[in-house]
Structure formats: structure tokens, C-alpha cells
Length: 116
Image 1 (tube, rainbow, N blue to C red):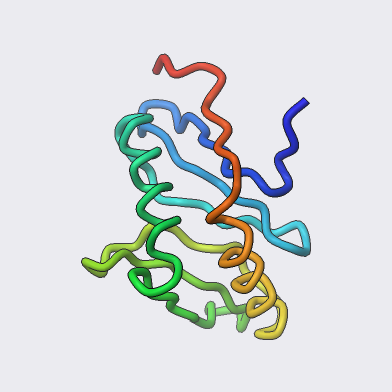
Image 2 (spheres, rainbow, N blue to C red):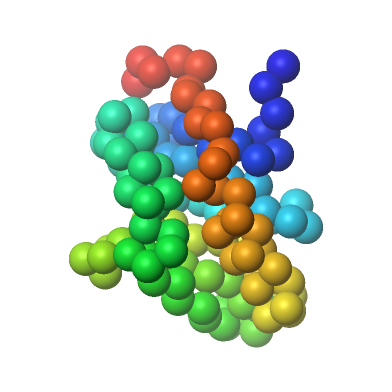
């Protein structure tokens, strides 16, 4: 059985393509935007892994309900994905540290069915 706790999981998004998720502390998730193919999703994962230190920017924001979340953007400024909402900034910062520490070394779990 594959552990998903420190894994990047690629999931089908129906006709919209594919996306990837990464578990964060506190039962929260980082969820990517949709990509049209599995290959482009893998490419986005690798781009994010290589860019965590200096190529991707982290945008911290407050939601209309005063929760906070973060968005990762690639070098070109396009968003890669975003986290779930957190109640406190401290929790969000812990999640960002977790993502930066573990995502570069996380195994990738491909979708079990790549047919749309």
C-alpha cells in the first residue's frame, strides 16, 4: 500500500484533465490547477519541485471569511495551485514550511486510470 501522507497524488478531473494534490498538516491540502494531460501534470510537479526555493513565489492571502491561504505561482506569474483555507496565519506558515521541506522529495502517485 502506498502512503499518501508525503506523496504527490495525480488525479483525473473528468473531462477537464488532471490535477495534483499534496497533503499538508491539519488535514489540509495543496491542490494544483487543472492540466490537459498527465504528462503536463507531471511537468508541473517537476517545475514546482525545482522552483520551490527561488523560482516560485508564494502569495499569502486572506479570504472573504478572514481565513488565510496561499497560492504558488511559477516564474511567469501563472498560478500552479493553492492551499485550503487556514484559520490562523501561524497554521498556514507551518503548512508552507511542510510543503517546502517534503514536496521536493515526495513520491508521485500517478492516476490509476489515465483514460478520460
